[in-house]
Image (cartoon, rainbow, N blue to C red):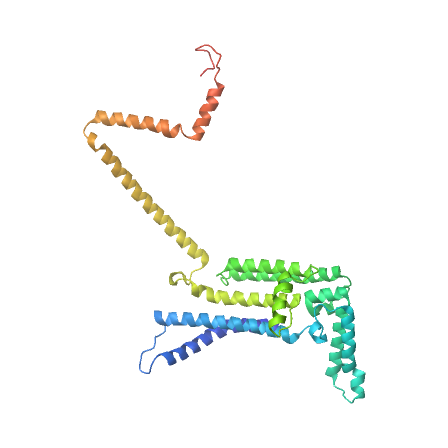
Length: 364
């Protein structure tokens, strides 16, 4: 598993850029006639063509990785498909089916017929393990949610034991994923769509914990996905552990794909800038615009004041009278209208002695 993840990471690192260059060369060879000048690297036209081709290549490679992940799940098969029984098969149906398969693949029968192939004996042991797992209710519950790895879990007998053991595997996986995403963010990688990556990780963790601790399959899997697959295709139905494995692989693949496609979908002036830098630049621009607007409003107010005072220019007495009236208006309508001033005046009036004679101490 680790080797395939490393190969997938290397593929995402080198293949899209390599294939984009090839496709762009082929595109120019088909669309540009002989003798015409091709766009040179560094020109806006060349960059725009490369951007579009790169988005197309990454999208197709993403679809391929989704198909590949599903193909790997189908190739690895599951106990139900190996025994040839449906997901709702009862204990009696499973035992009956195993007896029929054992009659065909038992090692003693193969030795009597002259066949000594070791793979047949291994296949019979695999069928026996599948039958023993699905017949035991606790092991069947654990297999459907955690996969064939439960065969190596020791000291697990009840459903509770398997669930606790499974959660001990799930929590470290998501803890390591969170630490890796945080470290990559500090190093400057995976900056685009950081919020959605964290949200996806949290939702996936909650979904997996909910799936492995419930006695039933996820509702969307039991009522939507599996009925469509079995009714319209020859695809076998998914088990919960297969959906979880597929979701894990696709989440990592989509993280990498969107980190490559996302910056290319932004406007040209925002490409190459980090989300924090873009927001800081926008904030600085908004503050500059606000300051400019404030200055223009101050100039307009001064002009209006000069226009209103124009008839009284040269008459100091009238101007002084108007200034006094303005001060009085400001006191009456601005200062006294303030809630804090009103509250202070109200408390002052409450402290006055209403029944005291005029001039008595404490009335002011």
